[in-house]
Length: 205
Image (cartoon, rainbow, N blue to C red; front, side):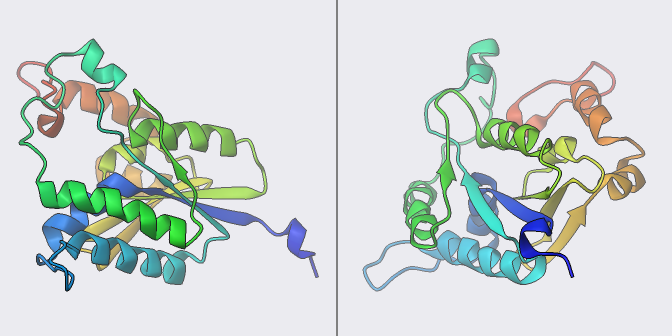
């Protein structure tokens, strides 16, 4: 039988911001006995338990956005300009959510001037070189699909609410979009992204 150290490991990288946003809008406005909002916190804990049950990871890590502008805001003044101001209740739960990860000994990664997507992409690029490690990105953001690489790097995303999920590998992306993960950047450039206030090509996006 193979020794444990020779067994392939799985790491799940959590797109914490995307999951918290999804939970905040999908669940009722729960609150603690002190009146603190807790709906999104309940959602992310539920998601963590589901990930452990479904994916059985050997390691986990969480990536966060930071509140200050990123290099994208510098490159394009209109980046995310159409988004409404974030609710105070959501901001409070984003801050408190870090306590959950610390309590579970899940390391947190963030970098000034960059988004969680960039942090995740950097970690993925490093881990792709490790032959005994598979990577699963847990996110509610479909932009992460561009990082999929065969079955080495997959994306576990919310399909409906917080209960229905799907695990994307390269084959499933091809079936859904008729594109490879590497082509999704070009697809996004042509169609634009209304949520980020990024226009597409006139007549296409």
